[in-house]
Amino acid sequence: MLPDKLQALIGMRHFSGSLRSLKVSQHKVDFSSNDYLGFSKLPLPSTSDSNGATGSRLLSGHTELHSHVENQIAQFHNTPAALLFNSGYDANIGLIPALTDRTDLILFDALVHASLRDGIQLSKAKSLKFRHNDLAHLEILLSKFSDADQREVYVITESVFSMDGDMPQLESMIKLINKYNNVHLILDEAHALGVIGNNGEGLAQKLHLENDIFARVVTYGKAMGAHGAAVLGSSDLKEYLINFARSFIYTTALPQHALLCISNAYRVLLEDQKPVEQLHDNIALFNKLVLQNGLRLRFRESETAIQICTISSNEKVKKVASVLQKEGYDVRAILSPTVLKGEERLRMCLHSFNTKEEITLMLELLAITLQRL
Image (cartoon, rainbow, N blue to C red; front, top):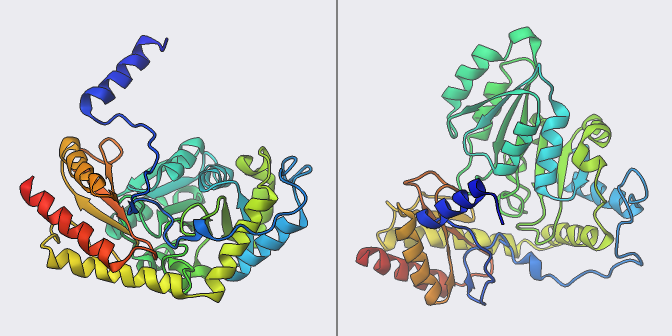
């Protein structure tokens, strides 16, 4: 039996209608996964003799393929070096605590992903959040705290926010950061890789700002259809993380088949622009149809694959999601406390493989359902 206080917490989730559970997708039209380009369905590359990695990379797990894929990643992202981690979560909880100590300061966007928040919590640094995409608030904090005892300051944000689908003013943010000494930007590009830019290279490279960013995190479990992540930065940063990032040092290396999937996804991005172009076309079509169906006040206009329809209250948003799911559309409700109370929403993910008819009919059904609600 669970202890009483844990039973009480589960009971509260039941009572509020926010209890999480695992569900198998039942072959519905996909408007929920992060497989933006359909790369999860790419043919599996031929694997090597080894299925397992045998150990951590500092012991027996490092191979020539690890080096080859890291060089491929660095070349694609126009950066001196890349270091593979087993997931985006591992990358963030390894990178942030490794860089910081008690004398440092972390300033982070209020809506950064849970993995970044956990990395911040694991660090010994003082941390303060700035209002979402609010550069004026960030400047207040930088002007007040950045020069104290010449501490190192790390500003953390994302290219595409996973629950809102919006992006920061990256050029303006970098100009602001460059006004101060000892301030470094960490940019999580998890939902930008494969989506933003002509080849899906991400927001930093689309804006030609990659050389102005201390560390970028790219992950492979979303548009790349694989698994794992990489930290992009200088060769010195890579050497430092090999020695001090605990989630890199104390875990078994990615196996060969995972590396081959990552490598294959990058190859396809370089050789075939059609999936990225089709995704961009679907995003433009979606925004057009939102207007035509009178839904703009419900949606936050987004240039990304993540589209948000706000429906306040867990009960109401679950009811709308249920209607869409019964008609064959895999659209998921995002409930509080995952998002703030009153900001419950449908989170719709667009893909290169969604058809015009699927997008059109789903939005028409949504509009009718909301009118009845």
